[in-house]
Every structure is written in C-alpha cells, then in structure tokens.
Amino acid sequence: MAKSKKRYVCQACGSVSHRWQGQCPDCAEWNTLVEDAPATVFSQKHDLSSGGRAIAFEPLDAPGEALQRRTTGLAELDRALGGGLVPGSAILMGGDPGIGKSTLLLQAAAKIAGAGGDTVYVSGEEAAGQVRLRASRLGLADAPIRLAAATSVRDILTTLGGMEPPALLVIDSIQTMHSDTIEGAPGTVSQVRGCAFELIRYAKENGVALVLVGHVTKDGNIAGPRVLEHMVDVVMSFEGERSHQYRILRSLKNRFGPVDEIGVFAMAGQGLEEVSNPSMLFLSGRDEPLAGSAVFPALEGTRPVLVEVQALIVRLQSGATPRRAVVGWDTGRLAMLLAVLEARCGLNFSSAEVYLNVAGGYRLTDPAADLAVAAALVSALADRPLPPKSVWFGEVSLAGEVRPVAHSSLRLRESAKLGFDAGYGPNGKDGGGDSAGLNYRGVTQLANLVDRVMAAT
Ligand code: TYD
Ligand code: MG
Image 1: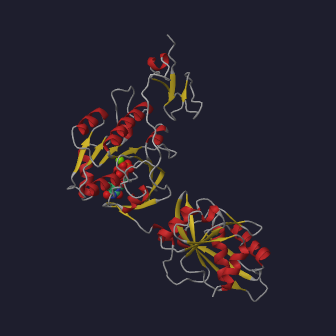
Image 2 (image 1 turned 90 degrees about the horizontal axis):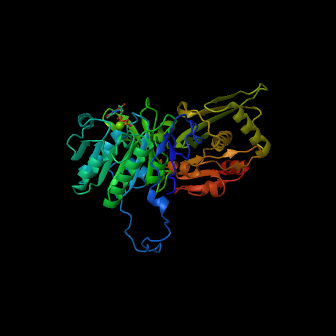
Image 3 (image 1 turned 90 degrees about the vertical axis):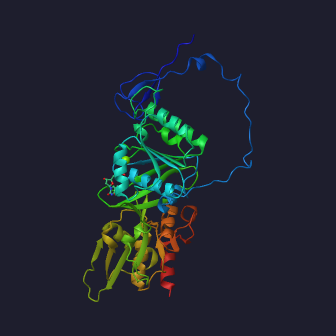
C-alpha cells in the first residue's frame, strides 16, 4: 500500500507544506504548521478517472430563476450588499472588535423579522442574556428573532434541520464555532474551514441567507484561512475608527453585485444609524457656486470623501514678494502646480499672493487632488465660479497633462450619491469607464481646463 502522505497546514495563513517546518515558508510565522488529516486511503489507492457517474453539461443560457433579493430594511446595508440579501448566499462580515458587527446584524435581523422573515441569530460569543440586553438597548426587544447561544455546528444544524429554513441565519462568529468531526480548538484553520463548509452547504441547500461574522487580525485581514474568503459569496468589511462615530461597510468581494458600493453608519447611543450624506461633513453645503472653490472626491484608504478645495488669489500692486500659504495640502505640490500653470498654460501668478485651504480641517494626501486644486486656482484667478455641482480629480504632470488616477469609478459613484452631476477628470478608459450617471468630461491637458474655465460665463 502506498505510504500516505502527510500534509501540514499553517494555522496563520493556511498554506500547505508536505513536511513540518518551524517557520511557515509563506507567511514566515513561527510554529504555526500543524499536521492536517491525511488524504484518504481511498483516494490514494484508486484512480479517479473511471467509475464515476456522468455529469450533465448545461448551456449558459439555460432558463433559471431570476436573482431574488431580500431587502434588509437598512438601505445602507442593502447598498453595500449590491441591492439586498440573496437567498442561499453566504456572507462573511469582518471587522475590528467592537466596531459594531453584532449590533448591525442584530438590527438587520430585527428589521427582517419585523417584515415577516424568519431569522435565526446564533451567538457563539455572547450569552443569550447579553444579546437580549443589547436588543433592549437598541429598542428591538420585541423583534421576533430566534436567538440562541451555541457553538456546536452539529447542534445548530440538527435544530435547523427540524424546522422550516429561516430567511436569515446569523452566526456570530465563525471563529467560535466548533465541529466534533474535526480535531482542534475552535478558531483553528481546519475548524473554521470545516464549520463554514457545513453551514454554507446548509444555506445553499435550503435557500437561507447566511451571515458569518469573522474576526480580523491586527493588520486588518480576516482571521483564519484565506480559503474562507473563497468559500463565501460576499466578503464585507466593517471599518472605522472606534473613537469616531462613523462606520463604513464595504464589500471586498461580491458574486452578485459590484464591490465599490459602500454603506455608511454612525454609532449612536441607540445603535447604528444610517448616514446617507457622510461626505457632506467636508462640504460647505452652499448651493451658489463661488469663484475659487472646487470639490474633490478624495479617497480615504479606499473610502471616498468629498472635500472642498478653496483658493484665493490677491494681486499685489507693489513689487513685494507674494505669499503662498497652504492649509491641508503640500506646499511643494502647490509650487509645482503654479509652475505648470505658468509654463504650460500661460497664466501669471508671479505678482499674486496665493492662499489655498482645504475645508473642514481635512488633510489631502491623494495625488488626484491636483486637478481640483488647479481648477480652484484658475477659477480664483479668473474670478469665475466653476460649473455648479461639479467634482474634479486627476494627477497633473509637469508637462501639463492630466494623468489617470486610481478608483475613478468609486469617486464618481460617491459624487453621484451626494448629488453632484458633473465630473471632470482624466480622459480615457480609466477616467470615464463608469461614470455612475454623472456627466463625465475627460480633460487631457491642463490647458483645456484653463480654456474651459476662462471661457465660461
Ligand atoms: P458590537 O456590535 O458588540 O461590536 P462587534 O460585534 O463588532 O465586536 O459593538 C460594540 C460597540 O458599539 C461597543 O463598544 C459600544 C458601541 N455601541 C454603541 O455605542 N451604541 C449602541 O447602541 C450599541 C449596541 C453599541
Ligand atoms: Mg460581536
């Protein structure tokens, strides 16, 4: 009989090696390799190329059911999910401890239960009393949720098998689940993978929308094996500064929708509130456009925030050296942009004081701010407001070209969400690939922008 091959799985990253080593060759963690169950004797003894049943192939256009989505009752959650929960789908929700995962899911479960959907909330982390306490604090104590504190997947699936499948099943969290068919403590790679596999199979067979809460490691990745992210249909990440109110729900993978939609919430005393206008914090909110003001759709990590860039230009009569003062942006970058405007666009700033301010105390580090700053400067110089409800982004090169920047469609989407209707940015596929309903105009050369602003009335 062939010698069965041992395999060792890293408990930190899930990589497989065929011999034990002190350090994982993939993630360089120490003492994380653990022997995994060997491949079955059957599979080693038998050739798998015969003896199976024939499978039927289907054409791609075979008639099937249209995707039915169930709204969660929280518009921001629906938006991040790409339109709502898909029955039979598995969602992994990751996030720092205390960010509000349990709160969000309890609120969503209560909304669904209130709308007549059967929901099951299994907490492996908190006792039922703690969840009840939170529910009463959230004012949801009367929501018809089936609540249980359990960690055994066998118990959970046995119970669920004996009842009508619920519309939503929340498992909080997958790291606390335990399967007695697999060796190891809860939270180890094989346990997490095995438990997730069983729960996902139940969800797919019964058309249940399954939400697995996942822990994250200190560098922000979802803890446990990467394979968990492959197994589920949707990976969501709940982010934010715990000291701040705002929380962003982002989807990192979505088999049923786009991944650049975000949901924004604020943590209040009564749980999470939906925020439909988060980026307005950095906008002045006035309707009348002013000369010297341009709106820039910035990216905070991968989260879009709209900020207002203000420029003021004062002509000096005397021959004194004009001042350049910047708040919230890089002074060197402003000097470069002024030089490009002078050299490539024929504008003259040499006898003018230039003041630049980013509203709301925000600090811009995104190179895509160049075009917005340039637009604000030109608008201030010409004393003409930019087109109303417009956003500007793009990197400006020394040659005066507007270069493509990352995540154009994310910026445009966020701008459209906040009611802007015109976007100016880099030309080409990258820039206008998906303009999210905005009137998008590509700008190839900084000189085009100058002509446009100067010609505007
Ligand atoms: P929780 O949902 O338990 O976080 P997670 O499940 O992601 O670990 O949220 C806990 C935090 O949220 C806690 O630190 C307090 C805060 N919170 C509020 O500010 N208001 C509330 O109504 C609730 C329920 C929690
Ligand atoms: Mg929790």
